[in-house]
View 1 (cartoon, helix red, strand yellow):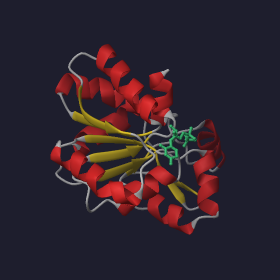
View 2 (tube, protein in one colour):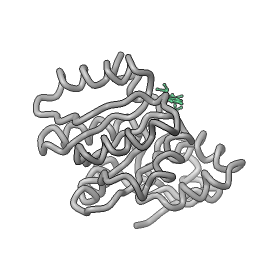
View 3 (cartoon, helix red, strand yellow):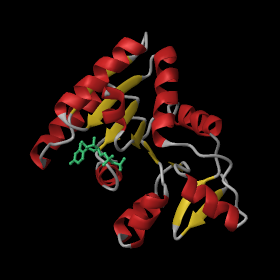
Amino acid sequence: ADRFVIFGVPIDKVTMKNAVDIVENFLLEDRLHIVATPNAEIVMMAQNDDEYKEILNKTDLNVPDGSGVIFASKIYKEELPERVAGFDLMMELIKIASLKHYKIYLLGAKADVVKGAYLNLKSQYQGIDIVGFHDGYFSEIDEEEIINDINEKKTDLLFVALGAPKQEKWIYKNRNKLNAKVAIGVGGSFDVIAG
Ligand code: UDP
């Protein structure tokens, strides 16, 4: 696909509709696909963090999550079609997952927040299949257990809310252990959903 590269960070020239279609295709393939949502803040973080920059170059889809990167793409005459905010993408995917019964797992945020997000999503989306959730304040010792839980529950869509860059680094580090089909870092989205 066509990408705009800004300071070494590639961003796919996709609309929300394109991004949703791409993720739905990822769900048909039996391997982990990583989705990131670069905005200006993330592009700047990657400038002082080679590991982060490299990870952002190895994801399967990077959506343009911010007016700053859209503005920059216009200046470089490499126009990104529209803003695809991570939160909005998450909500679109949740809608589709509820209709098609894709299995969702929520990882991240404080324990009461992720539980609140789970309960709100359950009450707002009939047919939603949230197979599990876990807070984002775990030690390395707990990681294996969390990953086993994600895998045993046959997760399709894994939403990881640990903030950037932690969430992308965590997904990338565990990419060969995670059997989910799609993992996407969603920052503070659980806090918003929990209200
Ligand atoms: N968080 C977490 N574990 C951590 C650090 C942060 O689960 O070790 C959560 C935090 O509770 C919040 C989210 O990650 O829900 C970070 O949200 P923030 O808005 O800071 O991230 P951004 O959207 O800016 O990437």
